Image 1 (cartoon, rainbow over the protein chains, first blue to last red):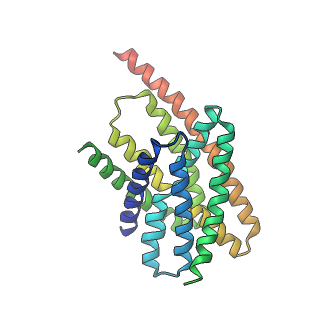
Image 2: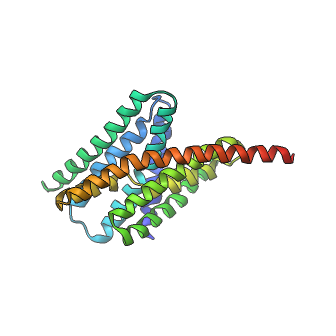
Length: 113
Length: 132
């Protein structure tokens, strides 16, 4: 139940950030920022050794709901179909490489506490 | 009021998506994340392009199902963390497979979803017009 609450808030947060940033740029900057910040935060939470219930609500619930894999891939294909192949490659690479780097950085920074 | 309705719908459906992801993850661990992510890519591609043929769909419903349920069902942060966990556990082969299947599979699943959604949506809207 508490995981649901976390996921609800995460989804609403993602939506609000997305509508705010959509007007600014012509490419999926919002999802990129959401996914990268979420990856860092989850790495950090995981490393902090929180109580299992707290981790479930924040990590699995909130940040799981906040970040999204499906929107990211559908956006990649939208770029693909509009012939923006370079942008598609750039978006894919920054998401995957950035996400893996940031989750590691988050985990690593948790060890400084 | 309309905005509140959309936010409420995204929240409720987002909660359901997160709970479904958690329950599947309990059974399957990181393979659960792989499953929900690939399934979600197909579903979101399907829904997004299926609805293009139906302008009358209520905003709160399409946002609730797409942004709320499917968006929350899939996860990018857990995907990244799964990779780190596999790396720390020294499961290099599983790590490589997980990465490759997620990256290629997510893209292909979204592509199939988009194609299916476009095609089925077109047929639906055509048969609807014939009925009129």
